[in-house]
Amino acid sequence: MVPEVVLGYLHRPVAKNEKAAAILKKRTPTALYNTRGTSEGTWLHTLHRDLNAAMAAAYGWRKGIGEEHAREKLFFVHTARADGA
Picture 1 (cartoon, rainbow, N blue to C red):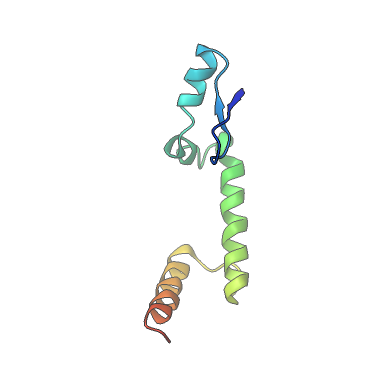
Picture 2: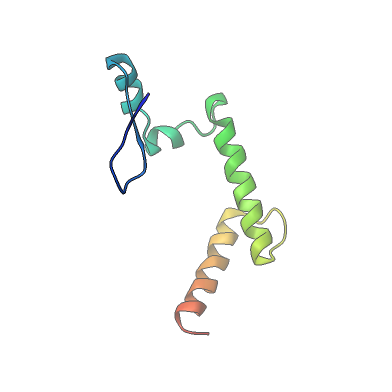
């Protein structure tokens, strides 16, 4: 890929040819998340698991806390912060 340089912005990859452009066009966040649960998306699942574990450790929560429980706890943490507690 050839970088497109625009002063003040991060470098954005630009495809070298039409075939590469078609591949690049399919690289969207939705397409990426749709690979979760497949062999192609194993790395993303691993990344999410590790990120969830790091977040739980940062908040002092037990290892292996479920996503629903973590969301509930985060809601209360952020609500308390917003209320100035």
